[in-house]
Amino acid sequence: MALRILFAGTVAKHVDSPEDNEDAFRSAPERGRVVLSDGASESFDARGWANLLVDRLIDTDPSDETMLQCIDAYAQLHDPDTLSWSKAAAFARGSFATMVIAQDDPDRRAVTVSALGDSLAVWTDGVMLLYTAPYAHADQFSEKPTLISTRPELNQQSDGSESNEWTHATWQYEDQGYRVLLCMTDALGAWLLRHEEAGDASALERLHAIREVPELVDLVESERASGALRRDDSTLIIARLTASS
Image (cartoon, rainbow, N blue to C red):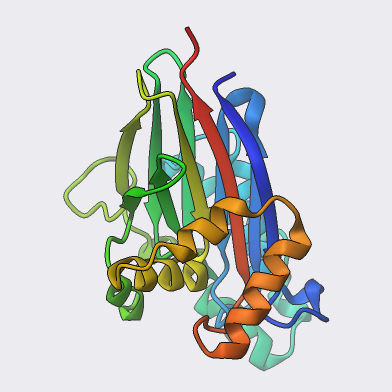
């Protein structure tokens, strides 16, 4: 297969509380697929919702029918009648999460990316940043993102209609040797694009070099300490794509 996972790991907003990490990711390199979701902290059960989304979308595309199936599955996780009034109210308000889906198409020698929210997919040649989705500029991370909700009336349609706010991109690697795909949640995405916009390639270089979770922990903790990286759950996936003859 053309897609090879070089790294996949996450760092919780508080390193000593990994159980509170609300990011979720899955990879199926044999099928050329990577999915990443960041559960919104204001949600009732952001962790459960993000994990449910990646479990379902590792095998299928985000159609309106699929989203309704995810919402139904989420509803089975909690019984509002057994919750305190405050938790029941939070459950009724809904849970929210981002989504990035990357799918390799080796026949076309291309990767298709679908993204909703402020998690970021990055396309590089192993040295330079080429394209990003859904955001292209660091200041976009200060905007309120559209998220996938457990309340169906709040969701954007996934069928290509004008109200569809999913971002779709196709990135080619034919006759280009290889390309590197990085998927990351918003704190890392904003940090990377700020460096790129300042003409500083060191952030991308440091991300490219990560192969073990302690290396990601060291980067995240050092950048948090300096104030350059917002304290949030931070997840990174690195995949290499090589055109086969």
